[in-house]
Image (cartoon, rainbow, N blue to C red; front, side, top):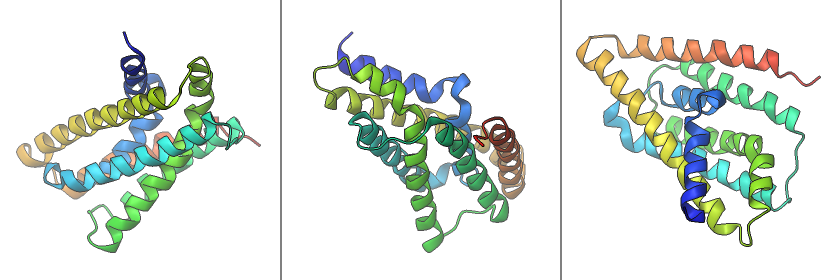
Length: 193
């Protein structure tokens, strides 16, 4: 297995690992108000998150940014809770400026999530002669994993909303409420003070 393939698989596994379900929760909270026909908006949101994630992974890998891991482990569920709460307040997709605000949140919260994995990745990449290719491969794996999660979620949403007749707004509220509940528990478990 070449270096690119190895790090791509690591990125994919990182996002799909059920033990690291914080990323999955965030992506679900981010996409809860959308259906399959909103795929362009979802792709932009998920990519904005990946860009933020990638940026802090790179900055931490080059030791430009260093934040206490216990603070980051607390902030990650805070970002999930905020995203879920925003959806509860407005369980329909926004148009215009509202969507742009979602892109900003996805990018900014991606910065925080990227710091959560940076120490482990820095150790892995420290053994590589050049870290650019592994870093790119890892981040492409993350993006692919997020798209798998989004695809599965949209399929479930299409079945429940489109076929079974579940109200789209109610579905968004249920998903966001469940994600918010888990995020609050995670916040209590990871408080750093």
